[in-house]
Image (cartoon, rainbow, N blue to C red; front, side, top):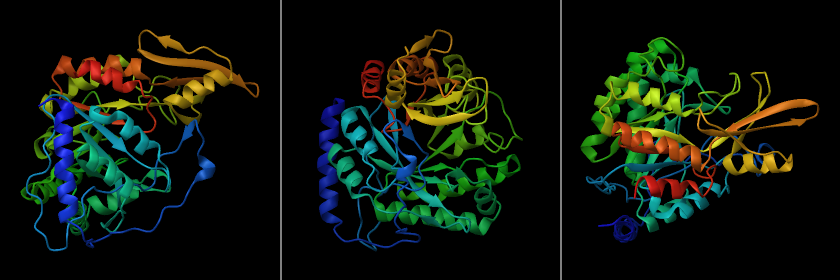
Length: 393
């Protein structure tokens, strides 16, 4: 069955489930309080990392048996898209999902806040539920350890190092997935100190043992690396080989090669992404790997490590137009960039667009990877879907 036809069939199945599961149910940590609205941090061209967002797409009646068989996903390279809302009422990701249509095979919802006591909180997003249901796209819930806009090493240590708190986190993952009808859970715990490596692996194994018997998939999102770093406080905690055995899939975040606190440069240069993929396939079965595809950029003060702001792809083009400068192309990195001056200071902007994405999609075929994971809906330009369609017809 071709991609669009399959989507329509799955959409009908979703409608049926919504009719059957008409009443709500409570689970540990559900729901959380309403999010603040950081409107002062937002603009048409700038973005901030979300604090809390997302939900599942089917509400099951309390006490109803879990769904043993999650929705089937398209064969061939998967197109996974991360979903997040930076404030309540932010519709950028939702609109981008609808615009993507049949190009997206799975939505991973930045939805499940991990707390220091091991509990997980989330809240419903009915608009996402409705859109995903109509499209027949399965939704995963993403577990994250953010606090005050940053990934918290303190939360990671508090939970991962304590078997009881890990157990609570796993129990909440299962309960939330069942209540919200999630097809899977994605663990995206970042800024994990390297000495917690065995404890992070233990969490993933424990989550797999709890979720898989109920037909709930488990994926992990992990930092990119090109060697088996075991000590750093960014990539050291992530044992690619062990995670590849325990999880159904591993999304490698092949972005932020250059970011806050680092010298200016590409978010994800093609040679670097290729090196990450080349190393990853020596540790993880290639078909289990999802290659991270960024859809954003950064504005640096030239010659410094100071990032002024993050930008969506569209925001980068808007900024270049405002300053009357031409977007250039880095032939080696295979990414766009431009420079401009403001307030007597030189700026340089590196970002990603559909052309840089198209170059990276070739790596999927080169190494026989399982697909891609785009960060994130609402930051991308619409043309990225044409690149995806051409690479994965």
